[in-house]
Image 1: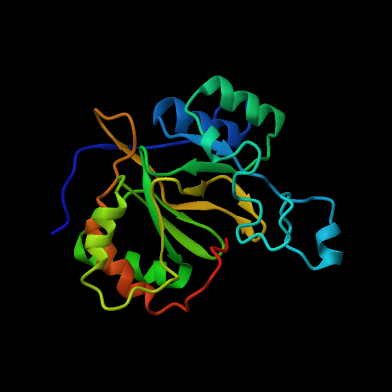
Image 2: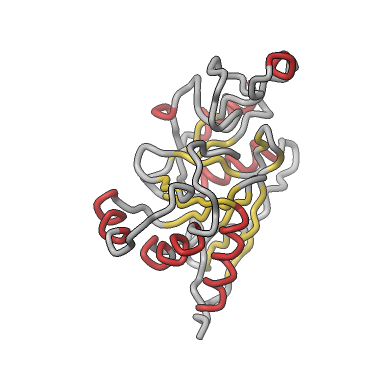
Length: 228
């Protein structure tokens, strides 16, 4: 049976007088204490089309996550300081929002088709999910922080784990809405919900969902790039 919970608040990022990106970033950092850094963004000059490269503003021609990864500043600069994020997104108002995982929040991601199948299964099982991001090609499920040791123990019972399933723990990152990637817009398909009496969205343990994600991920082709 699905857990019956108290009243919850859905979050809105529409703040008067500032961009949707900056509003979202200030919610992530000031209210939820999630560390973020601006993504590198896209090469808007159009030269990549002629060269056949991916449209990332970083110097790497074969960038696996074009536009939605840290570059300058790097991931180590991720912060919750609202003064810093205001400066960053005032200087670069279209910069993607990159969340540094492993401290306050972690994530697991898988191809979109497999992700939709996994969400249907988890809903039928009555598992309460946290926020879920849809990129043009993948689903990203935000979860409570986990260690590599914990994850290894959970995966040890599976004979085969697809490489299309990705883990974003300590030292990792994911992009958050309302960012856009080279392939399109990121969006919440399960919006963040903050329960009364709490200050940040509720996050499930990775142990509650990883078996379902592994089984669903086996239906998706393996890949070497974390494409967005």
